[in-house]
Length: 43
Length: 218
Length: 291
Image 1 (tube, rainbow over the protein chains, first blue to last red):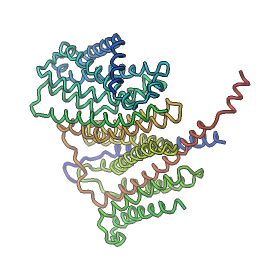
Image 2: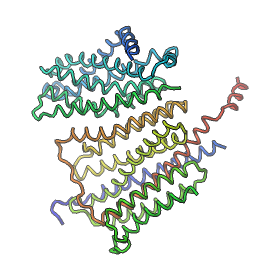
Image 3: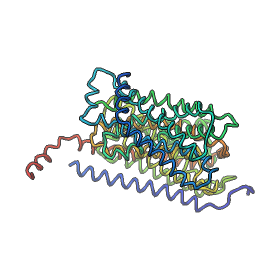
């Protein structure tokens, strides 16, 4: 390995992926639930 | 446009006590900033330009928000728009009036800064130019946003919310240029900051004038 | 049908984006049809983005949730494979080590956040010219999705900055511009919340969107000048094929997800608008009886 290489950092990688997918998931769920509600109001 | 400017200036002259109150607010905030740093005259001098512009920015939300007060009473804005004139004239009149008021405020705050932070400069001409350019950058989008927020709910919150992120480049350039004037400019960076400010002003003075007609139409 | 043309574009983008990248990754260069990799990337990106946006505009006013479901399925597929490759298959980078793997979600998010803001700007301009409210709904969807992506981008940027530069926040022009953009567009969402009149709300938010979008390059350059005394950050240098595959897969994944979100969000906005514009006669009658 290169001496200048950053070693480790898996926790940061996991944090970044975790944040990304959980935020996208939560936003998706919120959109779908809002859409359900609006469609119900529409009728 | 001239009549619009005259109307605004007349109005501002009639409410000059309010201008005085805004000035006192700005001076008070300058005083408070020094408590945030502590009695360290070296650091205060270093950050004086930032404090000056932050004080000016905070006071500007007060003047800008007030600037449509007269139009909102008795639906005067609609009456003005019925006149056979371009809404652009209305906008530029108001923006120039706001600009003059803010520039005056900035000039008034400079002695306060000199006294409190020991941040004097002999290059008053450049300082004046920076204050004029910087406040022009605040007043062009500020006047446009104030036209919207003065008709909305929660106007006190909305105006800074919309305006502050937008004027980041103008604030950055003004602070940097002012501190170069105060602390000295060994690397001759001042012209590039002033041209950035001028570019910001040119873009927003033309763009906001173009869009203002759509904002006030009914 | 309206959906055929964008679907063809999407398919071309997908072919060059994934199939070729996967084939190259495993050493089967024949699938690339002899094209150089720069051309493939450009072709895939152009076809993919154009097809996705076309698909969005053709389908955001339809009642059926089918198109959005399709896109979300595709997105999950891309993101699943892309993240698998990015996390476990691609080798660690020479200098950044494992931390480099953040790039595979970070860069696609950045591209798509900027794309969402650009879409909002385009919708705002079109709305101001033709006054059709479906562009207002599309703008609302794009702004909100763009804000979510910009928020994600700031979080990922902070997580990236900590191990590489030792601080959570670095005044890097890109990160700072994203933050400014996030707050500017949050302000527009707040404006939309506080104005009840649909016509005023649409025009004002379109005007604010144009003004905020024009600010982006100015903020970027001013922050870059301001920060010029700091070291310029090192870019990941030459990006080899092994790094391209997860990057491209995730970029398409987030693109599809973003398009589906904007589609559904625009649908919500137009339903709300229909509700607001409808003559509120029954309510008034009920109120009269109550009084």
